[in-house]
Image (cartoon, rainbow, N blue to C red; front, side):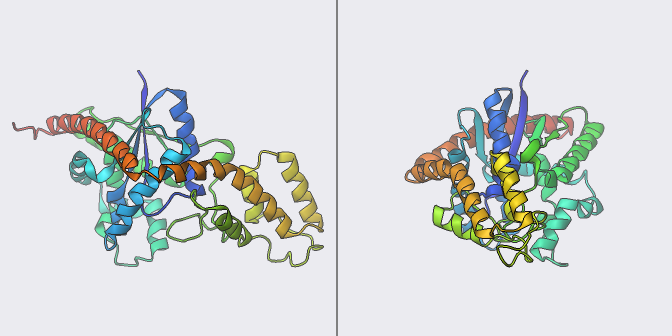
Length: 337
């Protein structure tokens, strides 16, 4: 029996290289393996937790995220792509799961704490945002996902789901499946920083990302702005590769490791300027992104066809979610009719 895989993204903006490295490339490999029933949610309900005052932004980006998925190679014949808000059972499951987690536990979630700081909520944290790990638990369990491909920064979210599943099964019987996080290996396991610094996570909200849809001109300009070594003022100065975003990206994306090693050695001894290294990174990234960019542009000419893919995927997701919800209601003794 094949395992079930669930993952997704919030449509608060186009997807960037951080998504590509941290999750999408892994999804593509798992999709190609044929070992999983794959579900992919466009999590618009979760996007509204901190974009409630700009619903049009969320609506517009549902299509943008779908374009990114399809352009990267997500195949709707092998992966069910669904819109979260159009699967009502997820909302009902969230309500039931809220009884199984405390406010203090939600406040301790490291991922949520980090995001609260990034968004500057202060004491005015929307309840929906604080509780979105519970909504995410509903997303993962509606299809009884065994595995959830995530980046390392999302591990606390998976652990929270596992706790909710254990509590539910303890109270009501073995209905839900406890998921496992699937972390990318090798280069893909690295958290990709934003262009502003090695310690800055690439983020849509921080505006420091390289997007899959960026054209060559935009890509070149963003690489030009990348943080390198502030002490490497003149070409002849010895430079540092540690903390240098350009070399970090080369370690992740460049296939010619010997060339990267030579560039590092040259940079460290002096005589190699930032412009030359950035030009090489542009060549590497543009080669990676050009096919995605071209497919995306072609798909964007027929948005109706893309939305039809989402309609069909959402219908399939509803069938699965309703079956799980019926089991949950029965286990909780609230299947009255």
